[in-house]
Length: 159
Length: 159
DNA sequence: GGGATATAATAAGCTAGCTCATGAATTCCG
DNA sequence: CGGAATTCATGAGCTAGCTTATTATATCCC
Image 1 (tube, each protein chain N blue to C red):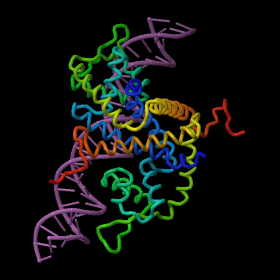
Image 2: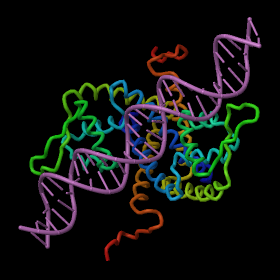
Image 3: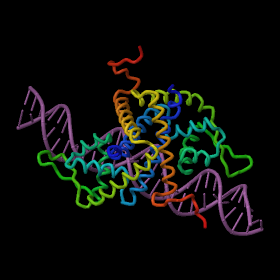
């Protein structure tokens, strides 16, 4: 029965998210960075030379939101925008040297935080949890793209 | 191996939370309410006559944060603060009549949202997911209460 | 070439949510 | 009684996110 899940899922997710965010922000603050900025920094590390627009899409956020976060990372000397050689509209994002040691510490912090959060959940379940989160993300993405009222004339769910 | 979970759990949770929040807020906006306010309203429904401080504790948020949300719900005529008879510092929260029909619609919306978000996840897994979220919440609560370095052996804070 | 259109980034201005610091009223308790 | 703690509210300020609009550049296609 879905009843009891129905009862709690949305709000529980909300509470967990708020608690985790506050906690991770507080810990990350030791390194002078917020969690949102950290997420951007980590993405740049794994994909140096990305365009802002690509990164925004990957992170499921609006380009302007990303711009603000990048502004701060640039102010702090952690990354830099470099113009693209063939398309002068484009900025490509690169780490600056100062980011390296910080990223090392942040990796350690991430392990700590994850281990603490997932304590008591065995690795198999943890993997399933992560996969379910991805599923939910996908479901929400779809829902946002074809809003519920609209049947989207391909899959009319009410027979 | 925990490696790949370690790699993604924190940031994936963040992305899911942002997407779900934006989506739920957008849907809830049809009824002139945000998700955060909705959560408060739903709690008041299930626990009429609560004090603000009790509610804040239940919802794992700071009293001041709750005060702001309650301000808006009062402005919109959905709930009201009534003074406690024996302790005049205390406000007790009650639904106003206007809240009833709204709560009915919101219950429907919640079912819809939950069903959409969890599409493709079977009920057993959905229950496990919810239980894991509760576990994480508990873990984070503990972590925040005794910050990481401190072993906090049995709370001998005095003496 | 040149107009229409698309894309990249940004600007301006707003909101929600959260916090800290402060203060006021009240109650508790030694 | 009188100091300490509790309960709530206010004000100021922050991050992060959104919408709408603007600027600059590229591309498409006649």
